[in-house]
Length: 294
Image (cartoon, rainbow, N blue to C red; front, side):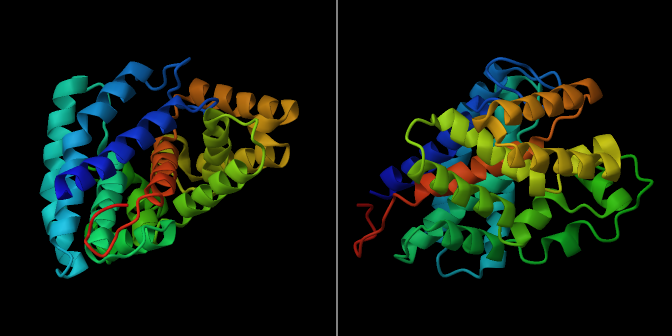
């Protein structure tokens, strides 16, 4: 039964990646209609499917370590994530990195397994706080003290050394506030207009993420002022109705053009969208006293 459970958790992680990838319009990001930063939609599909074993592994780790100190769980998740990145690169042939997806969705998969083992409901907040407890102190350990002049820094590390933007690490350590807000917006949209497609709801939620997310990929590419301008333009597009109105769509399309012309892709926002979609879907899985899912 545990095998079925961890498969279902991992399946929902893959589904979240696919639905985030298929959302449209997404300023500066890959869609079924447009490549971005040299990456095609087919690569996103192949990468998501290739990460199924990684997410199964992460969910299993969470399920089997319910009594372990949460910070110690990360010592098991890290090698699982490295192995997942290595395997998926064999599938997509190095065309893009899936480190952000592995970090967020692998962590949340482990949180789901841990909550199941503890017979607790998988609410978005419980998932976020459980995942966050596993990375307590991560920003301090991994970012503070980095040398700005090092040639080996990742884009996220450069964004930290230059601008103090803590990116995915900070979002996870703070309890996924941006992703939770997007999950709540998705819920509101699902309960509101039945005519909206899942693609449209996801695209609207992405705008909300862009408006509030300190995206290290954008900061590294466009500078802090550029990242803040993207946030401001996303907020303006939302105020105009976002993807739900013609005026809002015009604003979204203008932002999309500007990001593509700058060669900037807010990948962190798409990962946060996948996390939001994931926790929304996980909420439907409910543990019973036997540890089985209903």
